[in-house]
Length: 181
Image (tube, rainbow, N blue to C red):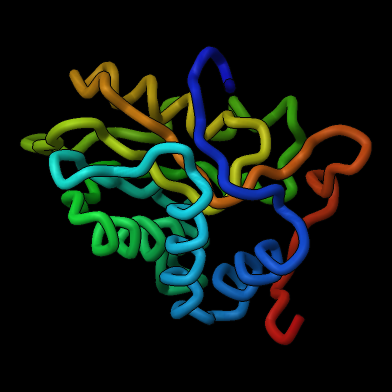
């Protein structure tokens, strides 16, 4: 639970799954999105149905320019193909830096007011909000609030990995390109 929101998580951000996420995010290995989606679907207690909508968490504009793709969108698209749920990208992220390297205390402010929903967006059934990694839940909390304000209230956040905070957290350390890890 994050801010009263139930979030489905498949794995702890460690081991082989962590390496796959890092290679997808920083190594350009886009094909790993399908594997990560399949692993998450096999681990979540619930999965989207053909009546549902799957949407990705948008990446920061800077990361999108740098990478050329949104890793959450690649994973969400693969989840959609595997389950038959509709895939849409209704969220717009206007500014805000990447959450990587941002302290736990600063994360909510970094994403506050940064998301909006495209007008005319149609979501059906339960809306599955997909992301690769969740650390504090600040992004998910902000997006669920934004979706609710737009009249989209049946939201099920689901992430591939959950990263622990606290003593073992890597939040203070900025992750860099891990290609070849």
